[in-house]
Length: 116
Length: 115
Image (cartoon, rainbow over all chains, first blue to last red; front, side, top):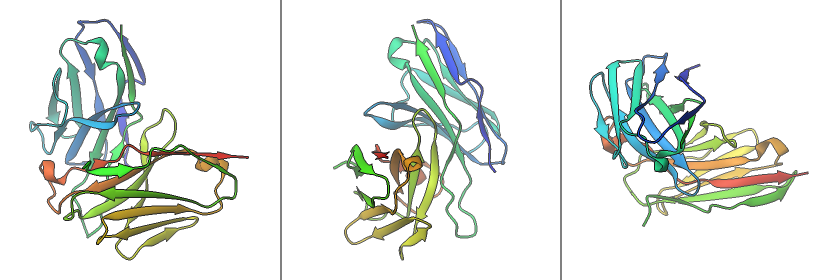
């Protein structure tokens, strides 16, 4: 089974702190994604990456940056944490479609971040 | 029109009931379709892909109507353990790579199965 591992399950940070959320996948997937999920708003895409050192903005990139120095690792950075960034953060990875089968995304277990 | 729309529910049903979820999508060129399940405070997990001919996995049946841009999920003989939020997911194009290939997630329909 593909494993997507997020470094922390719960995190509490202070306003203004720089926050790093780490995500590692072990199946050599090209594509990696960062989402946040809030009640009533569903999953919202923050950033994604299709290759090492490549990144693209999603729907809500403001206040975030990302880093992908190695294929298996995709980091989300909150440059200066604010209370409105309190949320559940979910990392996902996927493989390009192969053999006609579409596999969807595999998600990590999430990091619940609280900014106080 | 939102890209993927679902009734948010909640659907409250007794054990053993049959329950149907519906989903509509706006992009007629959409290529791939899925249902994901998300338990409370957990990550979404792939439940099943949805194929044009319809497909079944045990008590779960998924159907696609391309003409109406409509996807459904039927759960028969519902169990307490089926309580979760069900997310309808669409890939809006046949392009893999680049933002056009990203999956679009509905906000989910919450199901609560009661004894």
